[in-house]
Length: 317
Image (tube, rainbow, N blue to C red):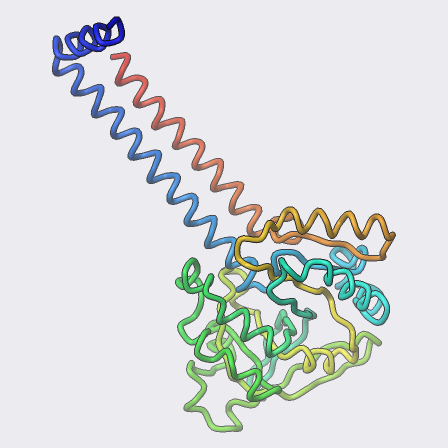
């Protein structure tokens, strides 16, 4: 009875000054809508960044490296590659996570020159297994969360690596720099032919032939002028090595990335393996994701404070 009386008194107080009550209600509703929209925007961008980092940039949910490789691979690649026993240890370690893992991929990166006989430009190359490239490109997460982050021909050309082991995927910016127009289907065989040149792990100059085929985008503006993707075996031939830089692990949807990362890290420590593991959100391995999310959270927090302050002031007035 006392509770019913309290509600009646509260209702009378609200109706006593209808303008004040209406303006307060509008302020609360507007603030709530603003916070919901802002939260939805942050979540949408977060998912886009996550999918872009994991799949489009081929970092995987977690990645296994030789110890100190992340900081020293580019200065002494032959010493910090996963090869032989260490590569076998990494593969064996992952067998305990078969229930969480969707697929794994072997990767190698490097630099050199891309030339079509007329123009030469520096490239930052990534070697990927053709099968893994197709699995990544056809992952439904890209269509759902990052469709606007990839080139239109990215999905349709994903099988080209399997059909032609000599294929090389370049960005539209790289194509423009070497004087070639997308798509490459209308180009003659000679116009599609390019050469990749670089320094092998032994310090010798080496070169291999390749054919323009797939198109991709990195999602990072600064990388669009130099990024290329080639078959792993082709890049290994260029650098005269059968090793890899890292082993990327792509987890099933709904798997706990943080949990898998911590378990792998604990196994490496317990068995004293010469390996390191990094999640996609690590500040070093996933610097673009971590930096973008940190900025987004600061911006979101700032606007959340503005919304709450605006509502509070409106109620107080």
